[in-house]
Image 1: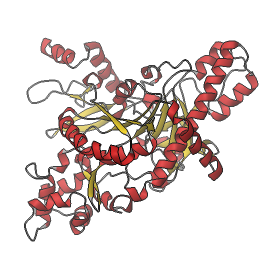
Image 2 (image 1 turned 180 degrees about the horizontal axis):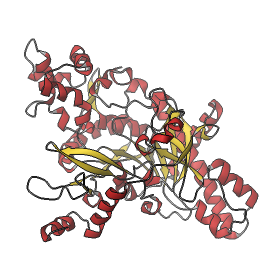
Image 3 (image 1 turned 180 degrees about the vertical axis):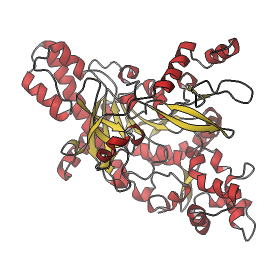
Image 4 (image 1 turned 90 degrees about the vertical axis):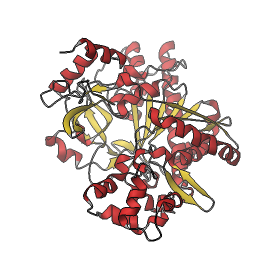
Length: 480
């Protein structure tokens, strides 16, 4: 199947022929659908806290965070092409759509307007405005990563998404005066990103009296997957070379695995808000962190008791089943088995009420051992015959996670040991107009964390303010 040149290309990509053959086998066999049994709901997999409990965990986090090394992890790879899809469609068809009309009518409200108007005539047409936004020799917004796009305009400041993440991080991810933030980026964006950091960090450090430690990484090419034709033979480009594609956010587990911290917050680059709407975000990040610290301490104490033989089995079973939401299938469980059950990474996930169309979110999923576990499940992983269960879901996860990644001895877990490799999906894509099949590996917050301890907590919808299309920047959480 592979020529010597193919094998050389595969090896240069950090892969082996065996890796690629397994990927092709996965294309042929496909991935099994998630066996969802019911949606997680309040009182059945999702915790809901009153004001007293909320304040308790916020205070716990504030009082204890200096004892932990904390990092905020922000996936920010890829260009903002989809954010401007409707605008690109207009340039290719000359047909307006709702997004184009909204953007043009409100163009002076966007944070990037002052830069944009340098490229506009005195009385610009719709085409002038859209062309100035997207043309490579003008703003070229669709080719930039969201991290570098001006999201918010203030009286004396314009801030990119990356800048807002620094400001947000300074308000909950600080420990001992240090704010660690890690961005995953594409190689072609790193120089511009670094220049932005050089420009904004001094004033932001002074404003919040902190020091930033900003690090970056790229998605490892060895996590890419081969593209195939619809008959599952390797897809080749116009020069006859094999085509590899990034395998989605799930591949970022490799990047996350290299972060040397005790507590890691994860939040997408586009889920950010402005100063006037940030209070809930800060408070509920602290809430999640406080819950994680509390649970992790209790897990470690139970492991200490198991190790010393002083544990109370009835109490331990109750903790595992009721607070870690992990049903125990056996009436007789040894100390070593209990240790194995407890000795896993922990994630505490904020979930918001589903106010839109039903889709992926927190579900009870029957695992390979045939018992229910809490998982974040995407709609693409759910079988058509299970859509009635999906449609009953009350919440979804906006990628709002805080993770504990050390064991009870303080040693970093190898996160690769807790992946479910049988989760993923096949998508139809194209290259230069030619259709192909592409493989998405287990998502960072679902299959790549399938064997973690998982706790869901309801957080307000005000903490979820993503920018999926450019017109979202007109929402109050962004435009003020």
